[in-house]
Length: 129
Image (tube, rainbow, N blue to C red; front, side, top):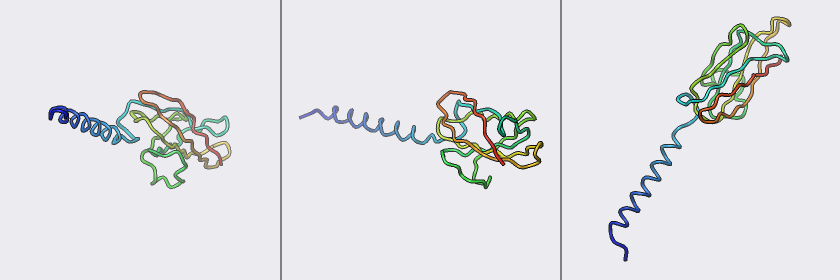
């Protein structure tokens, strides 16, 4: 028969494993991490300045055109550059809307990305008519 302190130690180890597993599972995609994504909004080879880029946390499929479904957004500068910082690792969907002033038409489109912990990635967001 095993001594009581053996079972107490085993219970403590099991409880610790459960607590660590649950606490690591609570960190979902979103802000609070050390990863960044940046790039440009591009219509074919042309940068679309002043576009708006929306981000949806925790998805790889297109969430739709209703921008209320997205978790955050940022405006591009005149050179079409956007940036999201301090993101946790995981899946995200970027969706951009802008105006192509050469064809005087609204353009939109998106791309799914996967961020790794403490990594920066550059990803252009492709848009079409």
